[in-house]
Length: 599
Picture 1 (tube, rainbow, N blue to C red):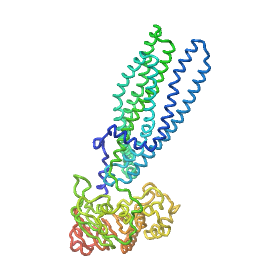
Picture 2: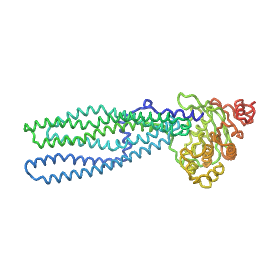
Picture 3: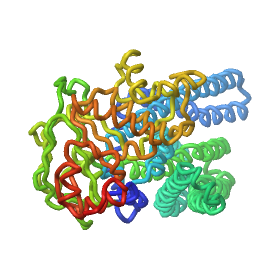
Picture 4: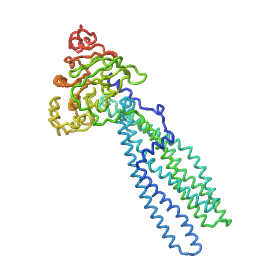
């Protein structure tokens, strides 16, 4: 199967209609609590500071009432002024400390969420990874987790503090005058009911905005991941338009979210201002009638303005919760993706010596409803020697390697390594025995040394020098300005295609594998380097098992056995000489490659 065919499902990210968009409220709260639970004591400290600050604010109108009464009676007010000053200063200091504790905790929650997601993403099963673009996954780690900052700490503290302060203020206001309290609550309930209708819109708009940010990341990753191709094709404007379209969608949904947040955010001021006018009118009439003193009306109005903060906190808490629920839904989608078992280094198999491989009636498809790639494939590869897989493009040659590595599992039949079903191996044990050179021969950003020891971090300098000489990379190292410590660029952009392939082969050899899988490993090499690496592979095949996928038959004529595949089946097995004379397809391929006359 070709690289393009294997990767095609990644063009289609998870859409909202394919998965549950918003989690139920209880499940959202449970998921958020799982992140907050390790930091519950710092959150409790922040909550305590916020409550103390709110208590200080709650006492200020009563102190003001006492001040007005003393002014009316001609008594001294110095003590009350000092008390008010102390309340203000202490409240400010305590709230500032609590705010710092919450911000620090919020950053810790985001860090924990990102560590969890990154660990899970790197353990995703290949089938799951193939159906979600990397750009969308990255946006869930970066953008979505950022939304957890506020909801994980500020929303909790704001909600509790706002509720406590609101109830306390209402109790005191009821003590001052029940009639005026009734007027106030009537206005607040009326406006609050309108705000409640807005909150679900905030959640939906936020989720769509986050999805659009994911689409923007996908579009950018598409263009930047094939940067040279974009430029060579003159496609900068078209790709720019694609990215800008995604940016516009993110902007549109972001504006919608901001609109509803603004409506909710201004509701508290509207409620208080409306209640102020109503209380001023009703309270003024009651003062004129002698039913309440002026000091009571002043204190009540101060409490009314005091309500702005707790009501605002409650509205903010609900808004932040709606945003967090949207982010939590997208994060939960990743957490529901299937992952491989955690690979532990101690599970790695110390056994040395070449490994055998056997396929027993293996059938495989990449997903439900997709056509079979393998149809009852059977063959056996003994330990040591080189086995080559040939056939037209798309017949499932590379899929053989994917099944051996357990990137995918057979739909039917068994894949055995050393006579043991790969499903019964631990992944760490299985993969530690395999050296794998992919068709694309990927090179990671970093230095040449980091790429070489990527699969064998314990390799010594002598091991590195030996593999450099065997793969012909020693001359490259001599030319590089910093030798092995020279950065190779993003995806190895500072290396040629042939150099990247040799780096990938050296990386696999440095691991000293029991089973070496080479998928078109020499396709970009010139004739001289290809011949040299053929000799290296032939030498390696004397002490390990080598499986090679090749379209250039010149690289496999010396193989101990060749497996010819066609239409997802094994058509024939034999040596080059046997197959040229006995199999028409192989003879045709050989003739096409000018290796032998067709017979």
